[in-house]
Image (cartoon, rainbow, N blue to C red; front, top):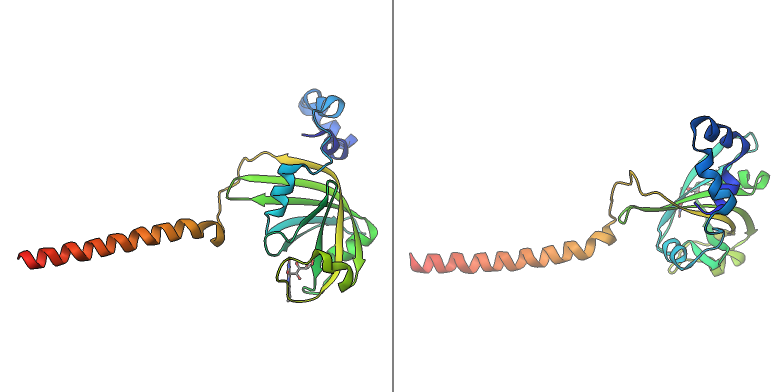
Length: 206
Ligand SMILES: Cc1cc2nc3c(=O)[nH]c(=O)nc-3n(C[C@H](O)[C@H](O)[C@H](O)COP(=O)(O)O)c2cc1C
């Protein structure tokens, strides 16, 4: 775990439990001499972020409730703008504005990005700023976006952490399966044609 992530997540209350359960010494290494800073988006993180078609995002309400919402779009709708900033165009949805309202009182956000096919996930902690209006969002539009977006959401990344891949069930989107299904379809067509020819040969011989 990179130092930036443990600094934000290992709060005094968390440390009390690590002490009680005997993991505090192991984890103090991450805080004191963690190998990487972990607050910058490197090439691996950039490629991973830009290949996603959705992510889970958590905010905190003014009454203290955590709130998780799934954000989806076409691959690449979450853009890496510089090594510490990601952003997306916020399109009109169900107009509940729960995440939007939560972020007025507390700009902190936690994201979890999943790659089920390759059993990888990335956690991101950051702070959000919004710029209201369609014009502000225009530079963040994914290719081929139809409806006008309501605002631009910019996330200043404070920490990243590659989460352990345990218990990620491999799942595949239609786009991920398509090349394999096409290859199988071609094989099946060849076998059907061959089978037809063999059947004809058998009929001719009998
Ligand atoms: C017409 C319509 C379009 C929507 N489009 C999206 C979308 O493109 N991406 C998305 O993540 N959710 C979409 N949603 C679902 C929610 O509106 C969306 O998750 C929204 O962010 C809710 O945010 P909130 O729960 O923070 O209020 C759509 C919903 C509706 C009714």
